[in-house]
Image (cartoon, rainbow, N blue to C red; front, side, top):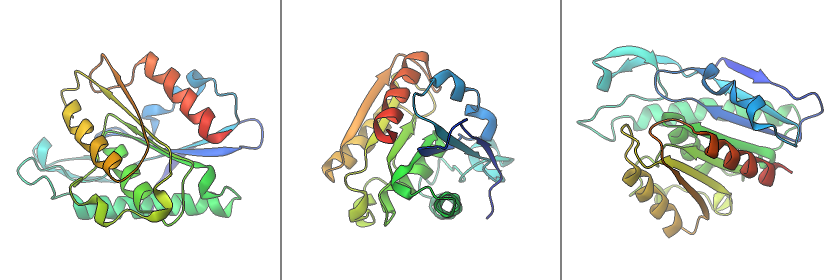
Amino acid sequence: MTLETIQIDPAETPSGTVIWLHGLGADGHDFEAIVPELKLDAPVRFVFPHAPKRSVTINGGMEMRAWYDVDPGSPLSGTEDIRQSAAAVQTLVEDENRNGMPSNRIVLAGFSQGGVIAFHLGLRSEYRFAGLMALSTYVHDHEHVGNEVSFASIDTPIFMAHGIADPMIPITRAVTSREALTALNYQVDWHEYGMGHHVCPEELVDIKGFLEHVLT
């Protein structure tokens, strides 16, 4: 699976890269407009991939951009799709590596479905990333994630943010994921906001702080 991407490069030589994955039914343009709003002090490259189009069970089999299928009657049905999508994102990481950006200067970020992929890849990678940024999302199959996490990922900074009124992914699911991670000794920087399934201005301030912390 080869992913098409949108790239936004800083005026100066980048000190880090953020690979940011969109949610179900969106595309790489979804968070493109956020880059100038962040007003980062550090020069950072942003890579926004487009997920492939696939049939999505929860939406009546409609074809749309999705990192994995969602079947409410079979919560683990998307596991193989998740693995394949994570492998495709890994090729983007390797592209950055070949261009001189080491993995420890790369943040994997994702919203909703995209966050599931960021978690899957970041927790299992044999290399430590600069950080994982998980927005309005969860850890897939959290009960068994401890069987697959890598030693290299244990001290990776993790930023988790969720809306307390999220109707798509209830905050309880995110809290359960956070607890599963902390039980494995991950350090999770947790944030919750009075919002639904989106990103709010207060959250952008916290995202800016996290990215500048791990990439400067």
